[in-house]
Each structure stands twice: as structure tokens, then as C-alpha cells.
Image (cartoon, rainbow, N blue to C red; front, side, top):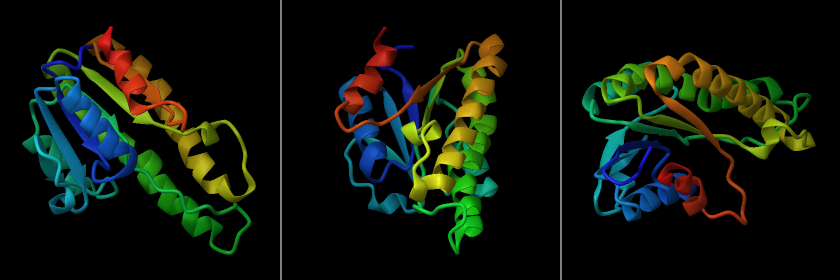
Length: 188
């Protein structure tokens, strides 16, 4: 998939990695970029269309998909890390919150946008994961579990959406690798 002339939808686009993805997509020639966040009015980047989205709320996911039917690239970037171990006082609550955002969020968005991607030629989904999907760190147990679940989801999506021509990729942000490198996967 080529970035030039693509129509991208980026979750968690108001700051951090999501904002960097949005900037990189614009620089690489995306025709349109939807920048999704709970508070899209905080998105001030020129050239993007802000979309109200809470990835944990199925109604906002459905509204976003219904309003963005030209998308051919979905980047599931929104995520939270509460830095809690499983046995911590708030471990169960943290695990539920992180699963809602980091696993169920990409699941809901992928389900909502899969028919749109199929209609638009297949397109691609990128799920932003973490090295903590595979490595245990004491104060990131619940986060790691949510990202490991998202890794399993990604593997299923790759197989399950192959027939409709949708590519499914993983991005793991690492300090030494710029977002441009993740975007360059699509420049082939």
C-alpha cells in the first residue's frame, strides 16, 4: 500500500505517537488524514480532519466509521498504560481499563472499518503494540497483557482479512526508530 493519495484514520492523534503518525502521513502525501481523539478540538495540525472518538465507546466508533467511508488506512494507535502489576491494589481495575482501550479499542475499530477497507480496495490496518507484548516488566503487567491480547488480535486480523485484500501490520514504537520508518513500510 502506498501512502501517497491514501486516506488515513489515526486514533489517539492528538499527541505523542498518534500526532507523529499524522504528521508523517501528511508529509508522505496522504490525500486526507482523519485525526481521531476524545477531544478533537485540541487537534490543531493543519491539513487534518478532527474526528471525535473514544475507542472504548462503540457508539463513537460506529459514528466515526459512518462518517469516514473513504478510509483505506486505519492506524489503531490510541492506548493507555497505567503501570500496574497484576497483584497491585488496583491491578484488576487497571487490567480492565487497559484491555478496554488497548485490545477492545482496536477490535471495535477493525470490525467497524473492515467493510470500508474492503469497499475501498482492501487497504491496510496498523496496530500500534509494544515490546511489552512479549517482555514482562513488574509494573507493567496489566499493560503488557493488554498489548499481548492486541498482538493476538493482529495475527487473527492478518489471516481473517487476507481474502478481502486488507494488509495488517504491527508498529512497535522504539525511541531510536522514528515514525518515518513505520510509515516507510507502506512506501513499497
